[in-house]
Figure 1 (spheres, one colour):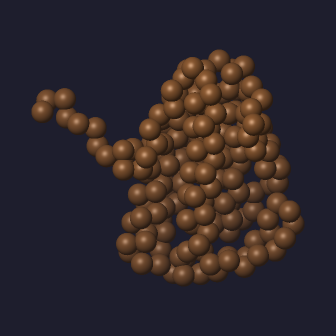
Figure 2 (tube, one colour):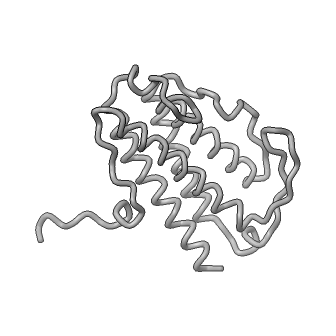
Amino acid sequence: MTDLIQNFQRLARYNSLANERLYDACAQLSDAARKQTRPAFFGSIHGTLNHILVGDRIWLARFEGGQAPSTGLDAILYENFEELREARKTEDSRIEDFAYGLTPAFLSSTMSYVNNAGLAFDDPVEILVPHLFNHQTHHRGQVHDMLSQTEVPPPSLDLHRVLKPAPDPKE
């Protein structure tokens, strides 16, 4: 179980770094370009970035034993990109703290929750935690694709490249 916890901690760190790279790229776009309607589940780069934050808040609230207020999965929590970016950084810190607080007992438990469609579930936590990270990766990939349709080149988000330390310029 220790290996699994360490893997989730690694994924939490990757999530923070990948989001930083993605937001750096998105910051190079105009507000209009980020909000431009595109063929995507959440309609735009901005909409998809908001959706990822909505999902993270829902799952972390559930993991903490609470329930996030239902905003709808397509809610625009932040119209302003810089406010969204700051909220993203805060949430990424929260995810890292969550990952570093994981215990074998928690991962071995089952969680009961009601999803946004009003359906009740009892699922193993050891499946729900990877879902948190998979959901983020899935939608970051959509943003990456939408970025490729702009003048801003999408950043590399490969896990082994994001987590690899930068070369020492002194060497």
